[in-house]
Image 1 (cartoon, one colour):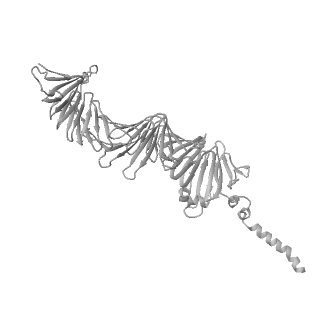
Image 2: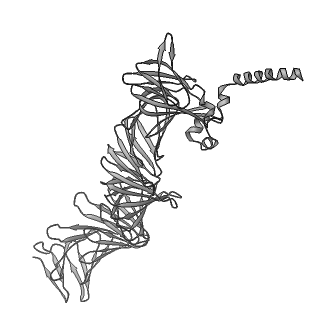
Image 3: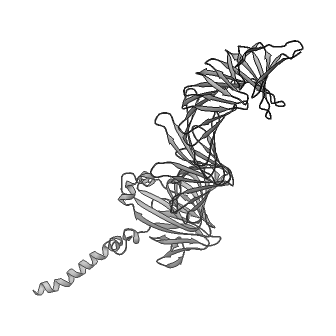
Length: 563
């Protein structure tokens, strides 16, 4: 027993010595959530000029050189490094990552282990960490500027945090500054992924890019590009900002609506249904319906263009357009107008969509034919030859011949009215109409390509069978209209009778608004005129060149010859 008592103090001494020999990191792991790194040196000031300080556990120490050694240069978990005015410092990490810190800079360094959730999320963290466990090294910049040279690593992700957002990097050399509320990144090599402080925007910075990001208030981010291009992701689309351009992005915390403002230059905003082109000073609002995927574009300021696969919509200030895209077969773009009128320009004509109306458009990839569908209300489709009017449910096809300028229109579903300066053409479902203007005479020539077509004027109605073609010309001074049978035969029905024109024959007609009388003139050839009182034949050029005329009124008719 005596020997055991004598040995006991010696045993305690050995145990105590062993405990002292354990690494401090092991002893401190339970002291705080960051115990793994709390006593581990993360970096060291390897070189400095001027007044440089390291803050450790709320105590600032000035970096000093004594002999060949630099004192107070070690940087631990949650330590801050500060360079005063006209002072610089080089900070080197254990993996040879280095920061060349400029004057008037303050930054704090911390580390953490990546969570399983962060690795499972994919994206940039997964790219950096690979399939292994990894460490996130966070450098929080309160103010200042530095040049960073990040050692490539699959296990360590370095992120630089400012009040405007977080830049995650790998194998990267770049300059970062945070001055007067603006984060500036100038990338030399590698890759930087930037996420805004509110996660409202995110983008990749590539070599050669030089950008500025500011967030004057939560929900508003301003992005400028000095060189390069940024594709900025938002929850409603992607903002394209090119060299020399800058844009503001506002996100409504309640609705998720994104408003993009072109602060400098013209910016594009790509959505799932098309691209909004926003010129300097203009602003566009965007919203995506979570259930349907429909995208609503509104012009908050100025006039905004919205380019789609089938055409371009012009949205005036205060007006909204709800758009959808269906590419199950041929891509179809649908637009609905809210709070005003939306004009949608296609390769064949312009669709005019009034408030509360909706239209769909698609383009045949082989022929280039544009189909326009009235999905809600009465839709107008304006072409170089006239205006087509469609009721809800109707569909019209339109194709413009690039060489001749001829417009070919098809009543694909339902009947279509086509209004011109001379009158209105009526097409039933399946009917095809061709319309072209003669460059020399100015005459409009209309052809019934497929099916029968009726053409209504103030003087009467022309009926054409398939293959027939009619020429029409309006005298701007007198208001007289001349019609010719260009192909086949025409039937021209008036209140007093029906004129029949064979190929090559021309008739002139005028209408007296006061008396309601119609005057017809045989300009070329013999024109027969069938009336309730018999058949009259009007011949070209009788005597003094006046020809024969027939004058019809409400109660009778009169005939007289020229010359």
